[in-house]
Length: 78
Image 1: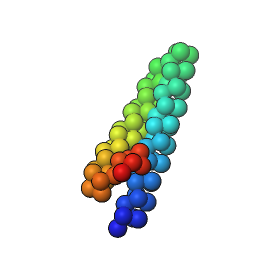
Image 2: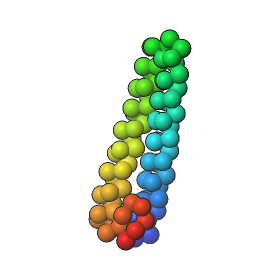
Image 3: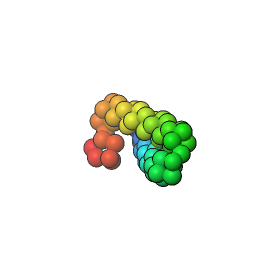
Image 4: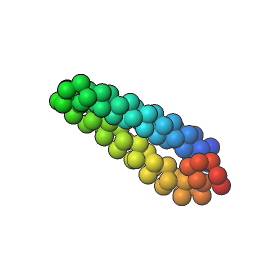
């Protein structure tokens, strides 16, 4: 069961990194749109950025719960 938990933890960590990166990119695009006068477009990109930040936070919570259950830290420590 630990191998499955380790695999799940790896997937959760990859998802966190991906969603945080996507959120950051959408926020940067939103900033550029707002600077160019595209308020509605910027708002759309900010909404997407928030969506991915929430997904990353949810994955962090799942990783913490999994780590707690198996006495492992999400960063790989024991």
